[in-house]
Image (cartoon, one colour):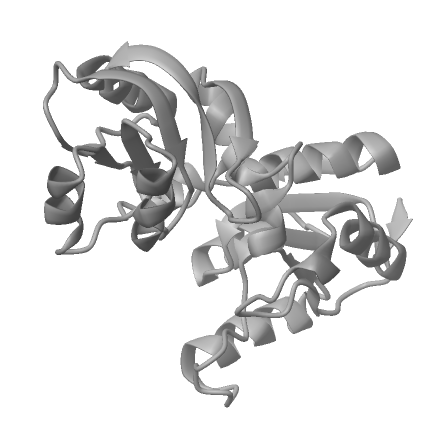
Length: 246
């Protein structure tokens, strides 16, 4: 068992939250009960996930996508009201970690994805959120590896027989970061989503592009973080995957 403020402080330091200028507040977003023993992790704080946390009698819910995004309506109405009310009524703490959880070198989304894809020598590209590493596969083989690891077929742009040695990736909605992959001479770039202009950019720069799913590529960081917290503080942890085709 651990106090919610103690847990918040530990995660703040462990994830190096102060290093990031983010689009949302990282850390304890909705305060619940003081003592935490049972935690649930998931990708996004939607109503289905909150309802599961209630059903499982969770003391805290950890997510990658929480509340209070820059540019959104600040009023607590509608869906946001329903979600926050459900958390408060059931005294559940909501912790959310966005960019710090993408970047972390042990439990982060990018390093966790590299481990599942068998990418060798993974490391960040400078100070960016994009990572790079090595494989010895064709584009078709990498696509199949991703399909097996994520249990969903990725959207692939490029020649199936293209030989891949140096690849780059960034989980989630990072399609615009393809420029970083191009700059380091990567043979392929993997991310979660794709925009209309990206296939042409990839083709004209002779780089393969793989859209593997925003939700699917970001399932693993929050699991790894909560497993770490479970081990350190003796907590009960369960990951709940609310299906999302995007």
